[in-house]
Image (spheres, rainbow, N blue to C red):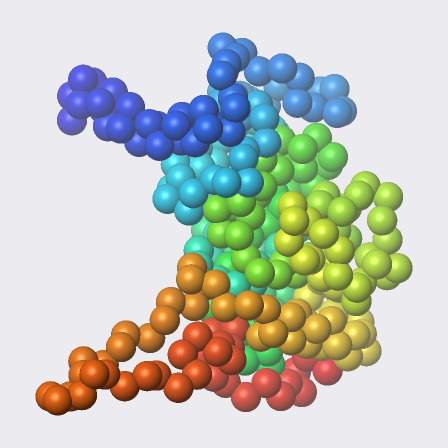
Length: 289
Ligand code: URA
């Protein structure tokens, strides 16, 4: 591929993202980044700052997420880029009614490029099944997209550098409910001082969306006696999603059958009503108890 066609491809890829930023009111992009780090330190070896300077608009279109993903995949805004194998951006459906937000990739996630595929992820998958949901019926993301070395907790400046990507994901997916898995997710999105033990189990607001803080599956692996609390929390999420008004994005109406000859056309009983949070699995769940 020639340099000219590379540049043309890049321009085409960037256009939707720039248009989105323009609509969000961003009129200037700096040539060099402002200090994003709360903890002064050396520039990461891979430093090559991306253009993120402001939180994206809540009206970000889902289509723009491809551009955000590409940007995250090239991101070098913090030192976590140095040790990553892959950037772990998302899994599941961008049309999902529920979004699960964890902390950051572990070893297996870093290898596969998908969130929640290691031991904690397997427990999350079982919790989802208990809610009557498959992984491809929810949207899954993390606070930081690159694995912290040795699975340490991400530093505040790493969270701050990565958060605009997550805000863009929330804005694009616009789920009906969010589940905040663990204290890193809760602190990043609710407040830096909150305690997960205190706030879990009650809905709070994240970017205008009801968000349920609960314990992280990795914590449950170490403290299986706490599973019951998480099961109670996610049942509230399941109930909220079931009871919330169907919306055309998440619940497209079923196709209307063509009218039989001589008829004006049947009505579809219950069309758009009682929609489940995707899937019709039984919602019993010993694994999450
Ligand atoms: N895997 C993830 O993707 N996120 C976590 O928070 C933990 C494990």
